[in-house]
Image (cartoon, rainbow, N blue to C red; front, side, top):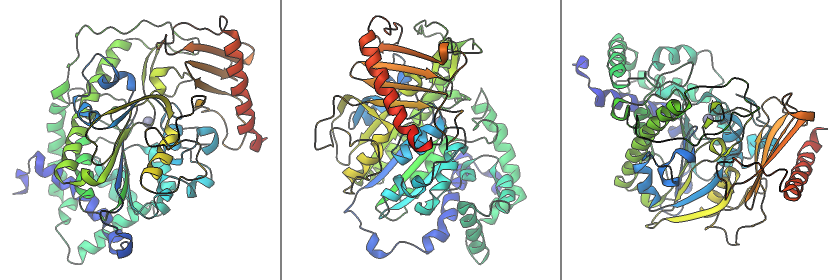
Length: 510
Ligand SMILES: [Zn+2]
């Protein structure tokens, strides 16, 4: 009978995983007094990795990439000028999760961790009276989440929703004894052995053959290849979406969930349904000159961007299913739903992707949508906002005190005071700096009112060790006209402000 398993059964099977993972933690469950059903609202934060606001139709992109996210936008607060903390996963997700910029949390390079104070002070500790659950496909985000495990009741193991995960996962279990998620999985497997459910199916040869057959089938469904996290695992976004939606209907409330999914991160492998959806559609990118800080010029940028946009359709479809599931289960009536990203993606000036020295708008401007339970109309916010604002905002709207360690502000329209029009929004890329030393080589932008100052220093390509540019991002959103010389007064004023800030953040490390 098992050889007859279809896609639905397969996904259901995969969906069983989080239940078994979390079983031991549920056994030592929250006090009854902590289960304040209905009083405090749940919070769900959804991250699509490397999701650029520039490629989202609701932010004005001419391609219809987000029909389902648009449905949420009609009932949510939509932030139109929202900035990531950095330009790749570690600094970007670090800022979202800790509420401070990279020069404070110090996770500068791939797979680095945040410094000590933030192991205690993070979005999960801010929700300590909630049942906290997390998942990510992304290994770098997982490194950060592992740091916060003490504050997460149910950290779903990263490997839980990968296609090839079973063998690898079981074998790594015994090597990673410090991995709490793996330990809870192991315990739950023991529970099953003592007369539980039919989880032995996972360990059977039969399952392996089903899986192999499935991967052959999947190759037909994904013409550009099965989505992977890069070097390691293949995954289906559907598996994680289904499992998370199911799990949320089972866990104690109020809950705080952080779910960080890989797409539309490279490689851009959309399913057949969206394959070639934007091919030859007449869309033309604005031509931009190759930047002096780009070492190796990438060709075929329009083609790469088209594949990225087609991959966004996959995120959007799956987000739509998740949203509908929350609505039909009734959870949406009691749940704040947040959609955002850790950083975005650029296809211009000779560069494709993220994590370079460049901080142009397409790689730092991310989506942010916040849905409040019961909200029926959309609200547009055009003020400049930052990833570090999400933590204080979610604290505030759920009746928690706003943590005093954060660098952000409670966002409009939830703040009780009007937004500070004089506010400085920084983005920090300092990949080659040591966490415990002052910044000596970095890219930083300061955005204020209509101007955005780019400041690059310590790079061999920069003349005299530094390079600055100024753009009026209101009249020139494509950042094509450098005003550094013609608006010298403003440029120097902003540069002075930025350098003073840099001095301040370097102070503890001198
Ligand atoms: Zn990322």
